[in-house]
Image (cartoon, rainbow over all chains, first blue to last red; front, side, top):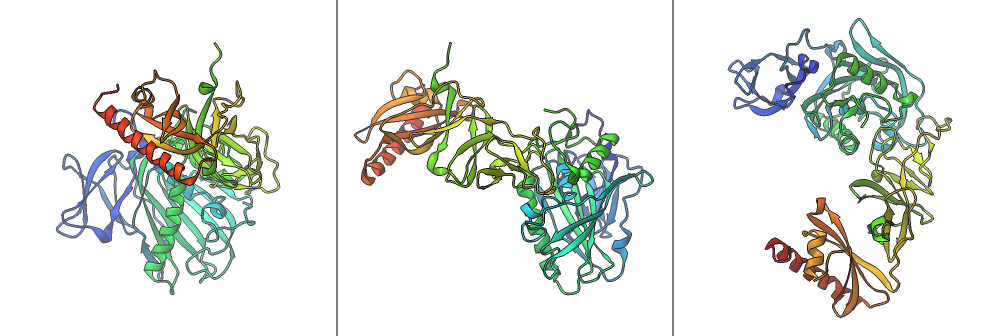
Length: 283
Length: 217
């Protein structure tokens, strides 16, 4: 693994919750390499590799972020998450036996809602995915999908009955996605739900969802349970896709117009050589 | 040389384990299969992979005469052609979107799958016999045959609990294990079936013990 160049390493990755740091530290992995995430004497996070070398650290969005490469730029920001009055939710971790890239791609997909998150994020006969807009923004080098609309029976824990939900998706880093969606209690604002994925190996990842919501009624426990339910439903899909590695070349799979975000994400991955967890050759 | 039916057709499940309107995973010749039965009772065995995003079709759901993928609900007819893409209800899916299938048939209460879309011979028949159960032996097919004093082969006749029975032996786990289908006389009563089931377990334990100590291999 270390023999092949891996430009993905030069980015930031979530490796733990800031709220769960401990002095003795937690053993985990990043790109197959063992690392330790601990709190230092000042309470801030310290991440070390196997040789004891301190790795760079950023504390943001409730998580510890690190890199085993040389990040050329700062971790992305989510300005909306800084708005006052938001309920910030550390959802925790879901370990999934799948490619980190497949986990992100699934997060970008809405067409599966009626079948995987039945009667929650979608329901038959409301299965149609209307045309939406997808672009790779050259200035920020991010993948964006906007004007995404979908009927949802229970879009959020705070939602009462079915609504047509508006979505925007953003991929600011190889294994991170930020979702902006209709905020039921506060029309005009966007709820922020993120998927931060820690690549352990090419076919194993820890998924750290995080949320910044306007929701004055639900408890943190309710919100965590709601998201855990959603991600566990996704896991039953992610662990049963063949091949395990995300195919970046067409030929193996049959995308449609509803898959435009996935197509753009794969193109963006390929353009940057972000191939850890991907396969380039049709098997 | 034409292959014998035993080599062309592989038992993959008991008929009663896949009732109408259900799908389940199966394996044949190192290949993962989605085995499913339509509402009207037709059995089919396909590549266990939806061409859209590679999801296992054995996790899918059956409606009427079609199998749908659990991921995005893409629906496939008996011939494996995609007939409906729920994200685009108005779209007629192109014929190029289809799932490769394998000939499937039933005989003696067993679902058999051929090694291609067409079978090269008729499905094996076992008049007067019906499948009682499947057992997993921690012993390879040759070891099972040797334990019964037979010179190999995948169809083994034997007397079990006083009945003339037959074992269909499938190689599993790269030959380290066997899937053993026990075929027993049709029409016998519950006490006899229970006795046969127990006798088969006794046989399994003896065969595994012999294999573990190397006596029969």
